[in-house]
Figure 1 (cartoon, rainbow, N blue to C red):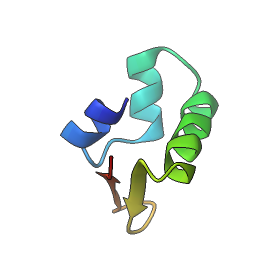
Figure 2: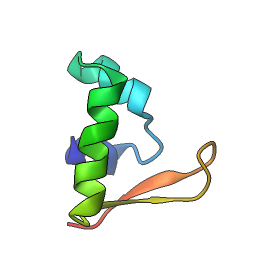
Figure 3: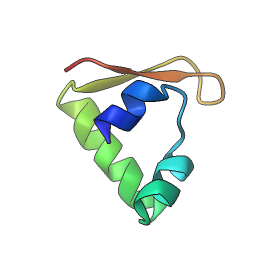
Length: 55
């Protein structure tokens, strides 16, 4: 998932859920885990923000 986020920083949880064939809730839980581990960070507003891969 990190590679996809790195390649497309403005990807949404809905887009990721379609790529991985899981629910959007599952993706949001996984994104929170990665955020808590400081592997990724979301910058900006919910509408116009983007992801940064830190690790």
